[in-house]
Length: 328
Image (tube, rainbow, N blue to C red; front, side, top):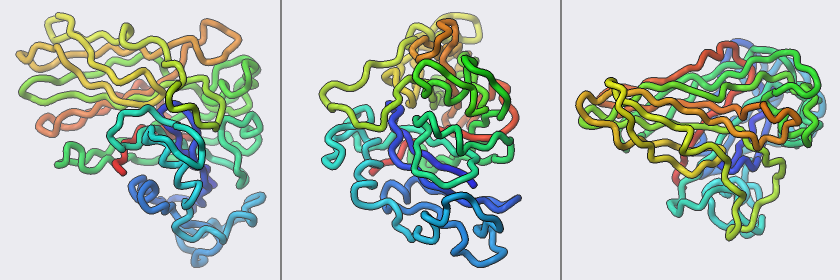
């Protein structure tokens, strides 16, 4: 049983739902259909016995949620909340949830957790740990379609290893424990610093999709005129170099919890370089001031060069986080 949560680029959870996963099978989730139509994967006991959507097992409290899922599941106030990822005022919520770029594109991230029961809790709830399962059994692929209007990209979903942690230790969801992390979420943190290949000039352009750990622990929307303070660290912690070691400059998105980097300033001959990206900062509500905020970076190159994904070494899978952009 998996729990899917969609977040804004300011780290506000927008909607969540459960998905039954039969062993050794896959379930597809289309963010375009979710944002535009309100559709989610329909799985669970209502599906034909033996089908890939039939769980073949019972989970606590799921009888209150299944078989009531009939698309469109996300509608009305829930749809208005979901579209808060566009950074526009949502009347039903009395505010905004995402950065206001003014282009009608929803930006944010998605987590998928292995859980033992169905609930309406968001991961920001400290009691969310009670439904989590510590096992590395989930894996997946993220596909971006129509990039630049002409090409697609597929990359592994971001893996987070399950493990045993004690009080005060840095974990994936530990920031949501009010400054007293318990380690009970049993999810390893992601890295903070990355090296990425860089392409610029006539050969193409490199774009990095990033996610950063923040400290927001509220599902409430904010006043659109006074958005949350940006995270620290950018752009001073981003350094670019060409193959000869000459420094370049970085053009970055606002320092939010999810977004894009696009590069400028690297000499076009030769059109290759390296990006040294340190996305750490100290504003994550941990008692140890030396704990660095976790992050993730995925590299996308122009199709004339081919997509490249930088993996800092995380191997086992348990939950994933990936950036997205969806026009509405």
